Image (cartoon, one colour):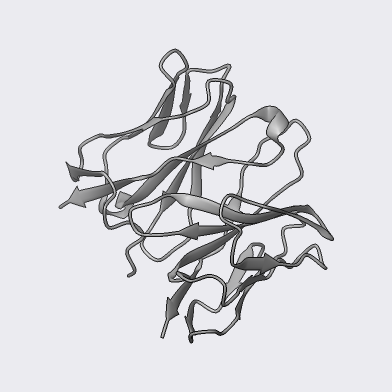
Length: 115
Length: 113
């Protein structure tokens, strides 16, 4: 099956701990994204990557880090500097823009909570 | 399931009725728009899209209307079913913005049996 796989589905973080959320896609998409979703709010962009070995900060990058060593993978690390990490995290990917459509396809999400 | 938005605007409709979900977008230069559906505890799913050179596009049981004059999008769902209950987001983008989307705040649709 083609798609975007996020793991784990639920994750708990202790104070001062870094945690990493996994996102893998087999859609052969060049671009990948991480969003944060809080209750009562829409999706806010954390980081995005248009191509392997390159990524850019989104609107709320502080306290997060990413890497893009492989086309298929875009892991997100929530660092101890992120003081309010409890949220639903969504990963998305899209095909490179060539005058076509900018549809982003989403994974099922990871819910992160603080212990 | 998990709630994705406790304080979102909510539209409550009777099963079988038509639903209209509205979205005001922010950038008058945006030229491509997408509607997503997000069920509780899941990621958003693509429903339908529309380019700015159109004012209406129909899918299966869904229609998107675009009014560029007032920067307004609407999603119409015909014969609403319990499975339509979800949060609906609109997203906008510029053709020269690469793959970047700007998402609206979302509307929760509740279908009463």
